[in-house]
Image (cartoon, rainbow, N blue to C red; front, side):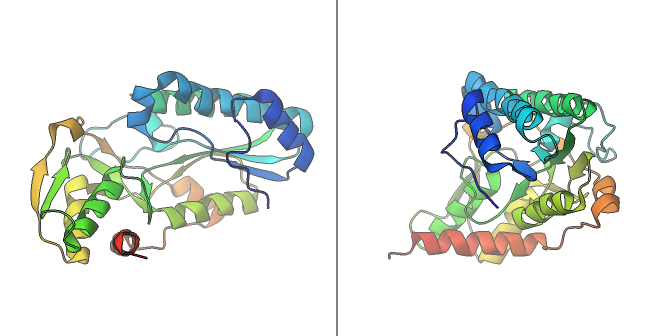
Length: 271
């Protein structure tokens, strides 16, 4: 297995082609790109270059230099947009209604993957919903809550936790379960479109309550207007993935939060 990180600029078609040609891959999990909705709004041009142009460069390199390669194009459940509270989970036939530069670039790359599949490439288009785990950056809600709770637990800040909109509902998975889903698709050779989701919606406020409980932390909750985003509801149906690969989530969400808190607390302790 070869991991290609920052050595290759995904927006550089020649560099991508040289990498694909040089290693002759049998399978690729394409994860390179901008992963933050907020960052995509601040830097839409860079987001398009990374998420869409990068995917185009990779798919074209595979078409020319490794046409038998199985490509997993990692998109996002964000491409479906929002549903009414209590609506049925999004499945792979749901219309795409992206609401941010991030989601729009992922939707465009997803559709491009479909076009290359029709040319004969072995492409799986995966649409993971929210996932988290130890070390997640603070630009994401779970990462921010965890870091703040860890700092409160060690007396590094007052017992005040700053939050955004706690009413949104999202579909959360542990990142390890998501990685297992990618490997299951790669190992099975499955092609087509697959949601990666738990099928269970959780309010952001519920996530926060669970985190504080497993961390043993009490704090005043303060809404920071700068963090507030519109209320949304997004839950995914992954029956197609389960049928194709046998995958299913294994890690309880409370265990995910406990591992995140332990990791954040350990990072704060002096070496």
